Structure formats: C-alpha cells, structure tokens
Length: 388
Image (cartoon, rainbow, N blue to C red; front, side, top):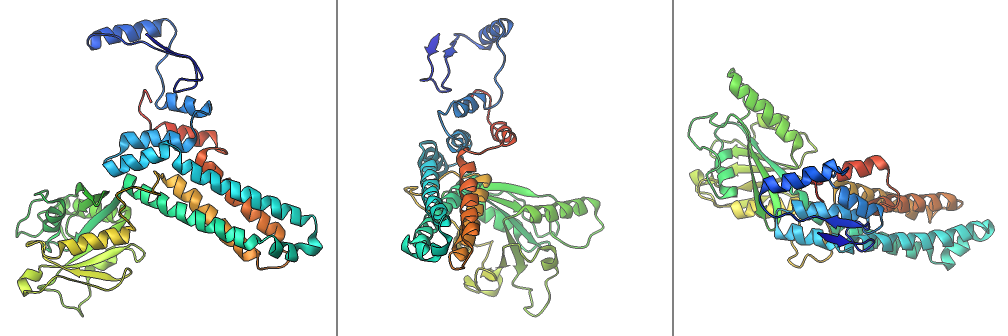
C-alpha cells in the first residue's frame, strides 16, 4: 500500500494505492474486495478531473494529459508536454492580465466622458491594444501548429478510374497499400493510410474512381468517395496528363466544393517525357509528376505542408497542444480585439470598446477553465481512459 496525503497527491485529495502481486485473477479478487467494501470504479478521466477541480492543474494541462497519451509522434508528445508544464496556460494568463489592465484604464476613462479622446491618446490605449493583438496572433499561430501536430490533416485522392490514384498513394506512404492494375475501377472502396510528414500526421485516403457506372458495388464506393471529400482538409484531384486536353472540361471538378482546398495533380508525365514542375498559387495550384517513377513526389510533399500551414520546428518552441475548442476561443478573442481596434478610432464608442475587450477576455478564460460550463467538462473528460 502507498498513501499520498492531500494536497500533495495527483488529485489533491488523500489517495491510497493498493499494489497487488500476481496475475489478473489476483488483481480481480483485490478489485472485487474493494467494491464489496463500498468503493466504486473510476469514471474515464476522473482522477484528472478531480485534479482540475482541486486546482492542481488548469483545464489546458488536464487536456494535455490525454494529448500525451494520444500523441503519435515525438513532436506531438513534446508539444503536449509543453502544455502540461503550463507554457500554453502562461501565455493565456499573460493575455488575460494585459486585457484586465487595459479594461481598467478604459473604465476609468468612462468616468470622464468629456475628455475620453484625449485620455485614449495620453494612455496610449491603441498602442497597448496593438501589442495585445500581436501577442494573441503569435499564440494563435503556435496553437495552430500544435493542433496540426495532434490532429494532422486528411487528404483525399480523387479522379476518374485509372488516372493513378492508387499509385500515388503507394508513393506517398512508401509501400504497396493499394492494388495497382491497368483495369479501370480496381479500387472500389476507400483505403486510408497515415504517414508522418516532417513530424505532422497526414491521413491519406485513396478513393474509388468517379464515373457513371451501373455496378452496385462500384456505386457504393463512389458514395464513400463523395463522403470522404466532404471530410477532407485537402483534395488531390488527379488527371492523366497523357490524355488530358487543357481546353476540355473536367467532369470530376463538379464533385469538389469550390471552397475546398485542392491541388490539381497531372500524373503520368513519364509517358510524355516531361520534367516535374509546380504551377499556380495557393488558390489554384497544380503539380506535374509521375506516380510510377516518383518524379515530382517531393514537390507534392512540400506543397502539402505549405497549404497545411505547417512550419516545422525541431525545438518545438512556441508550439502548444491545442484542441479545436482552443483554436475557436483564440479566434473569437482575435475577432473581438479587431473590433476593439476599430472602436479606438471612433468617437463616442468607448462603451463598445470596453465590451469587446470584455468578450475577448471571456473567450480566453474558457481555455484555461476559469469560465467553463459543466457540460463542456463532461465532454472533455469523457474521452480520457480509465485510471487517468
């Protein structure tokens, strides 16, 4: 037995650990005896929840525990450890502190409305606000990188049958993940593989070729292709460069939403003796490559990382584990601060300026759990494993 008196235990409460020797049968008997004595099984994440409720850790640190367990790369684990050690929380607390100070200055100015414009200039309200905005954008950038490390991006390969989607998948994952034949329609279901590209997880989905068909099995595969496109962060639209006519319409394009990020991949340049190349900008980019020989694959990898917004940092400095809710809160705070910047330029808008700062502070406070609804806590800790 090991006894950890509060508040020096993980949860901050008095904790007694029973360590049994032997196989599962002995441990089950020990567990049964504890339950018969009035104990109950812990809920998923309950120990970490208790640590949060007892102010041992904040909400970001609590979520970092799950992030460390889920980490698929060394970089993701290091990023989660940064957050567990309080680096992300410290950034948020600094921003909240700066907002509180700025709000105090503005509230004081509200007491003397006849001098509010002069006071705004004298107190350098706009300069202080611009400094907070810059700090927030830096934090948001690091959080986005951390989210990419944790979640990665989902890429879907689409195109007509036999344009080389499966060959491209095999090149990217560097293994024979999909069957490659000259027969159109070989792939009838989605095939997913996850690779690590410059430290970031990339979830690649090969799909059935899009075409009109009476084959029921192939139709089901096409339905899954359309569903995969909706879930994708990036679409690689493949064309056969040996047969494609630039002026001819591409029937595949109709299946891809206009606002969906995509790269047009002209495959099979080996049949035309062409060199690999990249064309266009971020909104209309294309790459000419050969999935058969591998020519141009490195160009494609670089473009994928660029469009994902990934900035590889071996040291992991300034990168924090961030869930989607963190990004949403930071984005909301950024929007409120941008509104606040506009109100500093307008007369008689001081009350609106103060309100935007309050809303920004409230959004940031939800990240560390200073203002968090009980239903959100239940959602967060329900994803933990039992015993954490």
